[in-house]
Length: 439
Image 1 (tube, rainbow, N blue to C red):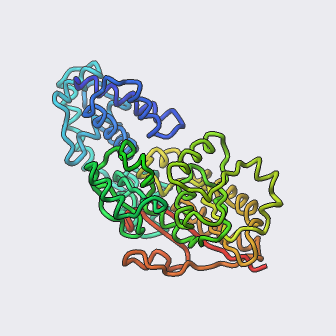
Image 2: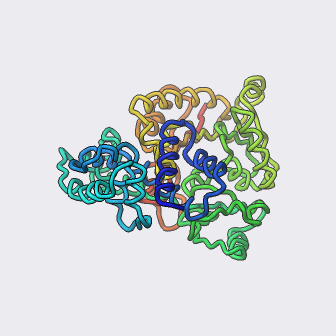
Image 3: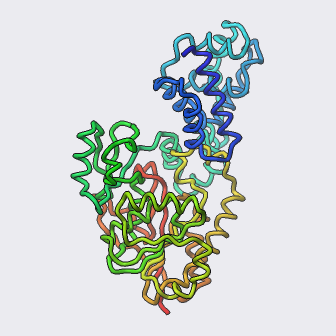
């Protein structure tokens, strides 16, 4: 496809993702399904460029607006960001006739496009920053308020490493479904389809693909041998330490990733209640449960939970609350999050999380366990919520996670909380706290 056409399509999907609140992966999938004329190389260029531009949005816009003397103001907006990306990206190969394509899309001369391209590097090397947080925000393209929080949580070096890790493409991680197979058998089955994976570092069922590909189209997936699940998410389920004969409630089951893992860890025994909010979630969960062979799980919609509330009171050995949150730990998978998130939203999430804890904690039986988890990096949604919950509920006490051996790393539970970070563990960012009901 001609460079101008590819550039135009990339700008189109990038702008669409900026304006549409739906997830970027959904939108780009829909975009490609509606344009079947695109070949695999075209789709690869558009998708990778779009995601890279999302990750580096503020830096690209800052440099683009600062470059002077390009001679033609028509190289502006998203087109300018795209040109800045390729002028500053390391190791990225330009499209053949890239500058011709830029000039055609902008409606300017090739000389103007080339001059703009060459001046970008000079401007980028002249930046001066007030402090480490400002420098990291600019160089790694994160909101300044967010990098200030990261510097406070860690230090400047770790904050920079975290942001850099979240600007990398996340690995494709599978969880072998032990209701139907073993990790070894799943790995062999994938290899027979030319899908190769490395073992995870922490979870015994984690398989990390060596090369990105659509594993969902494989016969191994159709047989129910695996689910797509980040290794960090797998660790949360492992940390819950579910027993086969328990009654367990997955209070915010959503798409069902942890429900399926809990069912496998329970060896299809006991009772597992997955609470969902929408009919769509119910239908998707049913499909996934059938494929996985999970027979001990029951789907409970919110309205049914209220009707049957007395049935669940004081009944659960374990309640897992994988709470709705900022999703800041998953930025490497969905980079638009960092531009949509605000400090006010974090405060609102924390209040909602406390309400959810209040609503579901009565279902925990005496000596039962409540596990609160988020995929957030922020203290306001994590430790602060855990501490506020304990102040409001003296019937519960903090239950530090034991240092279960996860590979060779014993640091994950070192404070009694579970903490996972992209730059340290190569997982999504996760937090979890456990509480035991005393009375």
